[in-house]
Image 1 (tube, rainbow, N blue to C red):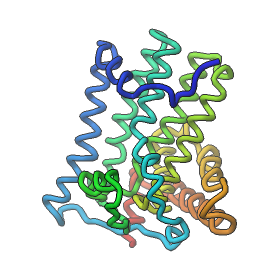
Image 2: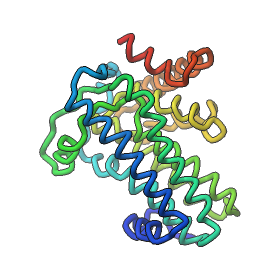
Image 3: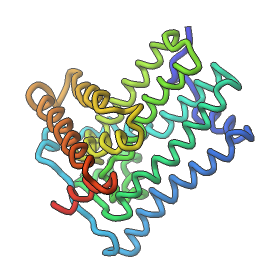
Image 4: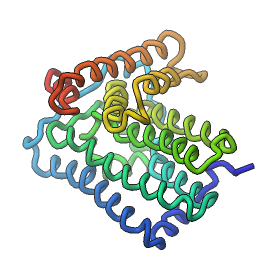
Length: 281
């Protein structure tokens, strides 16, 4: 029986990828896309304020989700999360995994550029506590200007990770052999999605926007019915929010996702429903 994906070493996986000529170029382009479309674009907004409008995107339902600093480790795991997936595939399938892994890396770089089509026209932010009692929060406040909330890249990356992981295992097969790992990654993606709300880096509105973005990015992997299943699994475990509050949050996320999807059918560009939402606030 295969070991959990969580056992993979992100550092060792990065070394393996950097040492492989077939993967190295894709990794370099992906890293460049992340820095260009997330860090550089965001800091341009900080150093040249006013050039790109900034919209607050909080929702009253955000208050139903308690600020939970203990979830910060889960939140910050999102990059290591998808790198471990690559390590798992390379370890279990060797050379057979090279092409799928390359495709995954390429798509991750494309994902950041895709989200930047919104950010480059309209930044977005939320109310986040200035909590500095833990070093990891100090790091967040130091390096993240908090201007890229809609759509949430954290959630986009999680959706891409769990859908691509299952797809790649179906191609490399047999996927049923790795059913525990597929479920592990799905649950991990949900946990990180919830964590972005628990640590107040995003609003519930940002989740809907990310789901819509992923349907438009690759509807074959994240069609509307899968989006509905994803939203339905949020906040179902014991804890807060619970009961009616959790149900209201799931309902809002799904209904706003459907609204974006409906508006997108007649839009000239995929990002227009998100920009209209931001400009109307």
